[in-house]
Length: 290
Image (tube, rainbow, N blue to C red):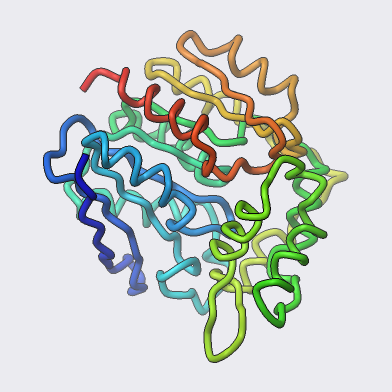
């Protein structure tokens, strides 16, 4: 197996922002490409381990940074950190990469994007992996995310960062090794001018300000069921507080071609760093006709 060629590229959004993607290109690519869409405050780098494994199996993988995350430009107007604007950005980048059909791997918010694309751009999707996201979002998980995005202090050093994330997320991720926690910290923060800072615009917190747990959010069952014509792998963290076991089971029951994976000792959202999860994703993608 050869090492894939990894390239950072930038596209320009309709309103002039530079948008970043990471392209993992095998020496001899075959089959449909895989598009990786991260969570709300996450970046393309989250998918590095699974992308390298897929590329070593001959798959091209494109991992996207939404505006305000990773190496993409921040938006001067935080109101544009919304699903509609991000979806337009994703579709523009795919068009400019000449990708008209792909397999989508979406973590959390990325899975919502995949379901929405299935509803109004079904021709783009040949298969979907939903990482700890479903048609119904649990209020406890939303409140927890609302409580930390854009609000965590800047750690003094990497050891302090690991300790902070263990305090914030230890109840969710009971099965992580020390190496996993260090990897998570380095995927979440970066060093800049001698400080450790988040890899996203802190103003992203304003995208969550409108959430009111007393007002039920609309469900996405119609959007999920729009994926009925393509195979789906639904992944749930065993300790997830955003995707309930009941909704997870209903997803498997209500979709004719859905398979499920529960990741032990992890919550929202599984890191996709462990070999069993990566192997299951590679097997699922390898079985999709191209």
